[in-house]
Length: 184
Image (tube, rainbow, N blue to C red; front, side):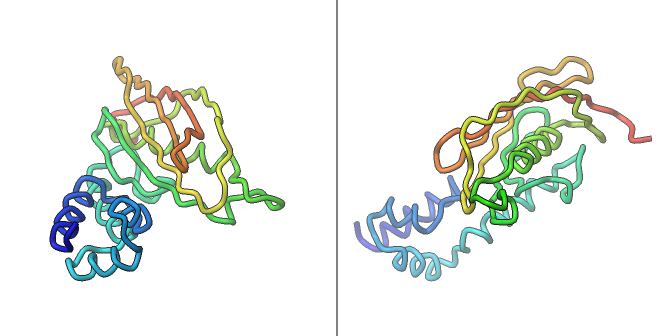
């Protein structure tokens, strides 16, 4: 593939999935990471952190039930009362002291805050949650949580959240949330 073709394909690929790392892009195009970085610089395409930040800023503008500061991870996509996606980059401070395994409350907090953010109301409260930890998450892994509203009945919302890290499922949760129309 010629450079111009690769760069055109790079623009299209990042437009459809802005969360690809330089490593993943290098593998996709069978080039070095340095080549991907040079292509991005030449095309004026931001690095991953900046792309995530841009997408997150657009998503945060649509929030109703929770403030941006209360979301665990980076909210990257949201369609109120339908679906949402967040990304959490794990770090050593989230792990158990004697291992590199992330503590479950961080994984739960990401899922619960994402479910809450999905509700189209001024306030949303978690009524119950049925959760399952499927696989351990290690320091440095990126957790991608995807929420989907599966039922709306009056002020009740049932929201399923599935989280993955490194391409494997790590968490499942079904949350029952209540939409509250007034915060007074």
